[in-house]
Length: 341
Image 1 (cartoon, rainbow, N blue to C red):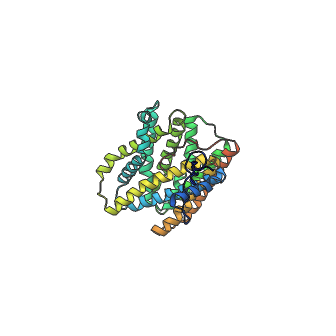
Image 2: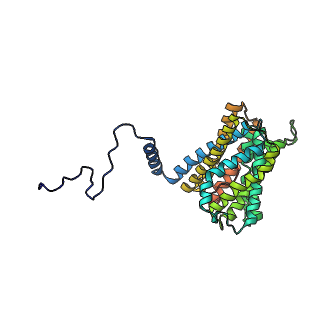
């Protein structure tokens, strides 16, 4: 090498660029560990990744209703929902604002009105039932939306349903009746009835999302849900307003955060795996609700709840299996989850 030649820079990679400095030896940083975990997760089969995301989503949703049940001891459900929606709207605000004005442009305004109205009814009735019923009971009755979905798909989508699916629907509704125990010693339970109404309203929401997803962008569906459900709740929340304590404000913020996190996990689940392979995993929430309900509230489901839940889950799983065998999906893979979870 001549005297006037430059020595190669040890950090140069031979192409005129500096090679990244070697990371000091020792424990990797949080960002590096997060990337490593993501890399390992990406190596798993799609359905396995979907199952893991689905189980985490169910845990988030169960945590959410547990907090709502705790907060509902003093705050009105409409107030809880309003603050929940505002927190979620704040989280997704960058997506909504970035998409303006397109995120508000719709060719089906009437469907958005029906969807937002039904979502509001589903949350009001469903979350009120959560506050006043054992978590496992409210969760089990909520699963009856699968059978309402069958009926509404016939009425609104013109789907043809065979005898197998009708039989599964009948078994599922029998499970609901077993849990409700009409005419039993405790008499008519208005909160159990509200759980059924919430499940029916949630099924309508899912039907409308099926139709909207064919003509609307996901950001538009997300925007109308995030903003307008909160606006519907505002007057009710103001009428029943009780100023939250500092601790309650903290829990309300967490409700919004875990609701958003649960929906994001759910979206990732259905992006990674097949809907037919994941649908059954949603019923893990019943196990979560039973355990958390006992640990936090000391509630254990009655024998009728176990029996009714078994019928509901059996009917729903048979529906999923039958639809998978016929090569159809039970739910549309829209990337947007119906509300409430």
